[in-house]
Length: 178
Image (tube, rainbow, N blue to C red; front, side, top):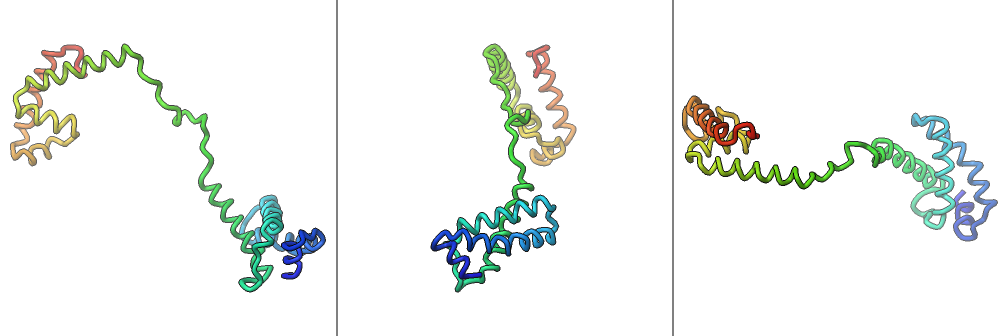
């Protein structure tokens, strides 16, 4: 079989390829079926493997492997590529999760910026110990017990400072409280 493969590589010998195809294509299909591949897919993989043999015949090296080993390796690799492709489905560009959020309208941006400035102004007017507790609780999402441990103050003091800060926010911002 190596000499048939060499004839395909050197001269593009179609008759030699036809002999190779008749011999190996059914064996490749059987091999794929034994690996658990469906009949139609096994047929397609066998044909793809033989097409690759035609295209890559020049890269066959009889000193490294027999013709059969080389051809079956091509088929096995094609099957592996097919399985990988099945595990990583193609991306559907119409998937709603992949559509970016629309840019906010100018008036929404302006309202958000105004709210942020008002919140920062209230934060600046809070006593330092309340500001610290608010930042840890709301900006860093730290649990109250952890804030107490970190600042070495009682849990009740953490809650008290948060309550006083929130009272200040409500009085300053009213219904605009974020």
